[in-house]
Length: 616
Image 1: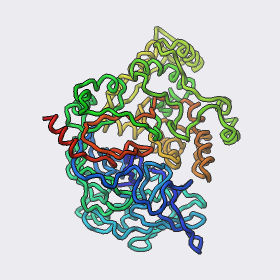
Image 2 (image 1 turned 135 degrees about the horizontal axis):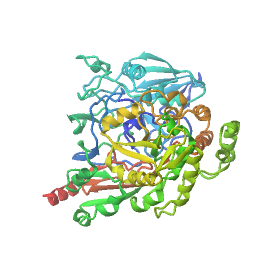
Image 3 (image 1 turned 90 degrees about the horizontal axis):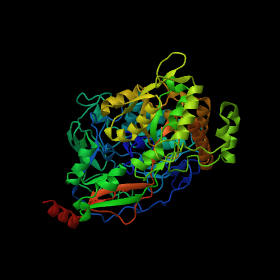
Image 4 (image 1 turned 60 degrees about the vertical axis):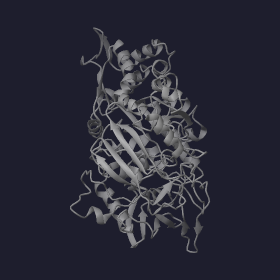
């Protein structure tokens, strides 16, 4: 699978995993040899560590776990743009290096035993472990990585291709050794991007008429701790642990991957999924609905201790969550319209009536991280933005950004008045209770595209508030497949968006915000941002030489994005709310940036027997 991370990452997010630094040794010829590489800083763990601090090497193996998810899937090929792949697919893959859930800047060798790179960072050599094997027993070779790179280059989703935009050449130097040369000099970022590459088994894909450019539901040959056991199209997928997994005794895997089977069942409706959990058909869930967390678990199973509710610290960068305007639509090209629609979103009222006061308002494109802007601009940020002063509103360089606020009682009067002033200035006026364009008479109307009915409860109050001021907004809920097609084609007015974020920021940001991606199908620039200052700041982020410089530049970019009202920010939380049947064990220490499930947990035989008896 492409560039996978199995600890606290989705497949999509792992495609751009940020890597870290080991304990390198410089050879006499100026070439550094290391078991880990880095863009900035040093790793928490020394060379020769026994296992992750959050993993229990004595954890028992065995048992099964069933999880639930919403939607559907129609392909196991994660490389190409077509198709929607299933949950948990990252369990089956290995990469050159793997990340630590304790340190987002660090990574350690997995398939790659060592790496080599010169002082000018113009290339990197990966030396593969000869013991690395596919599940059919074939060795993993340099040619398998070449095949993966060629597939991404020629057929991969634009999101994947962007990770390797700096690659100049790929040279196979031997069965277990290859070199990737890059266009840049004195930058580690392209090298750590290369270290995230996962292999593709050429011998399997090119046999029996298989086509890497097509979707498929045939279980794919893989090399990770799990393999695909059973696929029920769009309804479920089951992964089974590989007992003779080639890397099971490496420090990066010791104490991990303890369940014999992990099954994901798909549901069309979130309420039905929750009822399946309460009835025991699902074992573990992360809870993302405030009302249900507060009132939905008032059941005997929780009172009797059969189901455990837990609130765990969440230090992981949250990613941006909200409604995004499509600037490809003329309506949203006027910042006054976007700002007015932001003012009409009464978060405090929704927080009180729908979210039970549990969440925090997002006021950054990089929430819950060190990379988002906060407070007034610092001198470092002002220095970065100063050359662009004439292209920015004055407040970008002088004021702290704050999302609109209300008293939470539902009237939102001050913000409504401010919004209507902006709309009048932008050429809109009220006629017969509707806002229409003064010149054309066209109504102010748009559609909000969603893929899950769950979010309707949040968007509906907003739509009703817009209607009070003469704005005609509709909610359109489509299935996952249609949602993906429409967002890939940018066929929407306003869309619910969750953008994952993996520090340190790098090429991923260009796929989301750079003007060159506005019209590229399948990229992640959903708002259609096309701004010269954003482009310039993205270039500076990619060339940052120190972590403080990178953070200051990312915060400066955050300010530019925030003050242009490209989206209506929703909320985030620094608490992970999970519920599970009391049949599991877990290490005493959690990872810093993940819950540890399912990688570090295990089935406790005594608890499992008690739960089985209670269910009977």
